[in-house]
Length: 103
Image 1: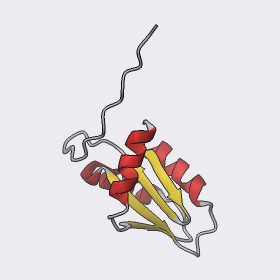
Image 2: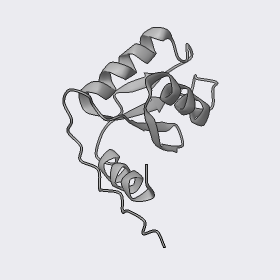
Image 3: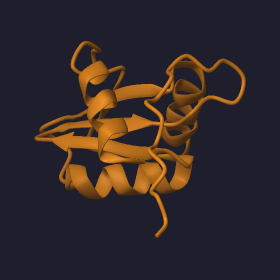
Image 4: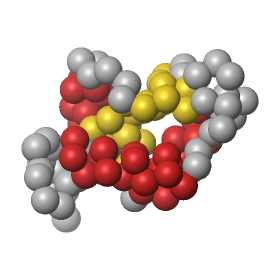
C-alpha cells in the first residue's frame, strides 16, 4: 500500500464509527472470524480497544492483520483501522499507484 493510498483510507476512516471492541478477553477465534466477515462486507473497519484490555493496540492490530490478511491503515491511541479489499463486493477504489520510470 502506498502512502497516498493509506492517506486516502485514513480520510475515509475519519467518518466511520468503531464496529468492534476488544476487551479483557482480547482476541478470540470468534472475534477474528467476525473481523474477517466485517472486512469482506465493508473493506474498511475501525476497532476500539477498551480500557480493560491489557494488550498494546499496535500489537493487536498486527495480530488481527496477520490472521485476517488485512492491512493496518493506522493505530491512533486505542483505535485501530484495518483495510482488506473485498473479493465479492468491492466498494472502495484506491488511488492508482504511479509507475516509476526506469532509466
